[in-house]
Length: 331
Picture 1 (cartoon, rainbow, N blue to C red):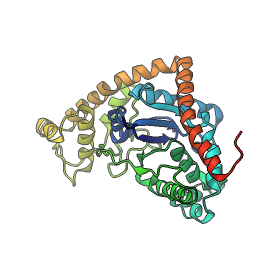
Picture 2 (picture 1 turned 90 degrees about the horizontal axis):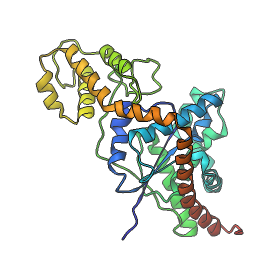
Picture 3 (picture 1 turned 135 degrees about the horizontal axis):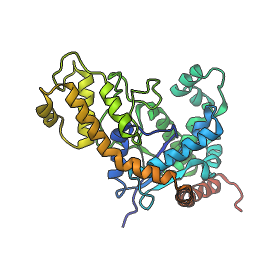
Picture 4 (picture 1 turned 90 degrees about the vertical axis):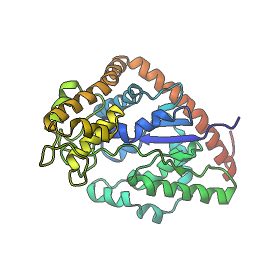
């Protein structure tokens, strides 16, 4: 039987997973856990390019790990771990640095953007970020990587590095492809339906977390912006109500058409109330599991340890192969 191909994804522990993250990506991950060797990393090393408050950072990372488990990622089916718990990431990064050119890094769009935003902290980690990302992916011989628009360039440089190394030393790395899943729902801000829902939005009413309490969820949907008239329709000139219809559909697995038929003439107030209740119902079990997990730090530590051990065994094979190919003396 042919071994399953590896699907790899790493996300920085920014604190919360929004319903936009869930509908756009994680819901798809849950559907393919049996189809791939799925590896999900908490990319805590990547997050260090920005100054962190240690205690807050540690808590956010642990919370993010617990949210992965609470939402349904299964550590028996998938490898779930902290990037920093597997030292082979940074070891392979150094080796790949020697096959990556400075000009390639300085041309990266994200490096240019972040350098402008963090002019007082243009550190080497910021410049070398794509090589660490390449190491993350290539370490596990990943065939597929789910990427957003802002990461496509990083996957391209990962492919370039892999091909360059393979051309020099023979087949060493799987050259990864972008993972194109069935299009998840694109969910926008509750306060600005032209902007993607973001956990970093300064407006606290713009995004909803998968672990938010019921009162807060209901309040945010009550305050969600709507369009001029009171008719519930999915139209290009009604971006606010169209966004809310998309959320309602994603949360209930009902078609937008059926929701429009039910709520067309009932007004926004009733529509937003029922939408809020649907979101509460969808994520109440997630919140309950999350709170239990955060009260059992021993269990979280054990799951993280086991995930890192599984990841480490896979990563060791790749690093050993790379060292042998480039002529390092083996221990």
